[in-house]
Length: 317
Ligand code: SER
Image 1: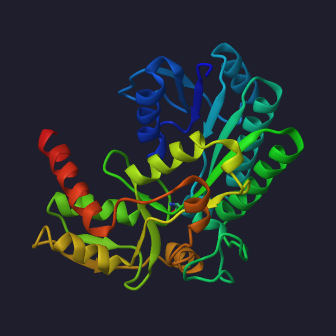
Image 2: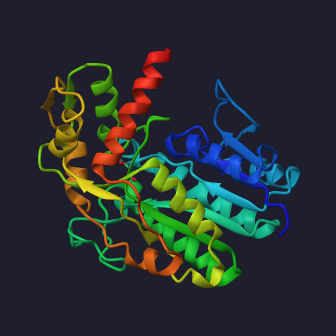
């Protein structure tokens, strides 16, 4: 196999931070080019400043490093996106087109494009949401992800570009923080708990959402990208499930480990309405069948691992 050279956009983000390291371990530090708007404070390996709206620079970097794969993670998330709909549309769509066109014109053979449970809307079956279903999202982020899925499929069918995608649930990890999403509370809650602080939740009790632990999300991404092309029957984006819970359930799971932890509920109308438009649980049988997906973590095992790792993190600072 030829040596892969992987370029990542949004490498400083919640997923990018962890995925960059995982890809460096797997493919070698010198074969991964991390890019983002700003140079991070601590950076191991190759980093280049890149605004995904700058197609020329993207093209230049792809040539400079002989890039063969792009993981395009840069995007504005659901809650932030509502503050500037047109700006979000521009970043999420033009950024994707720059990636797809650069790949098509150069020697890039594989693209990863993250989609999201945000593609679903109020008319989608909420429980065990099927792979193929009604997708009428209400957020600009969700609209851009549905459109992005379809454009990925279009470039695959018209130009033979090997675009692969996962509809991520909310992702929970200790290594990095999410920014501007509706599922962010489920990360913040652990930080507050480990620091011995009270947590005020921006979603109501009973708001069940699909979530996944970071190691499962990273493993799913790499497994999908490494699967033989003939196994990939879905060229829009794969449903993926880890676990599903409501705020009071994650709070109780934490309280089983940190007895003094206290939570109150102060719903934010925007994020509450976004959450209510999304699925509660996901049918990911297609991913299981096609490329052998299997999640490892549930709420209890994730909670123990999150707390252990955050305790270490806060003990050293
Ligand atoms: N976690 C994302 C958000 O809340 C969903 O993809 O916006």
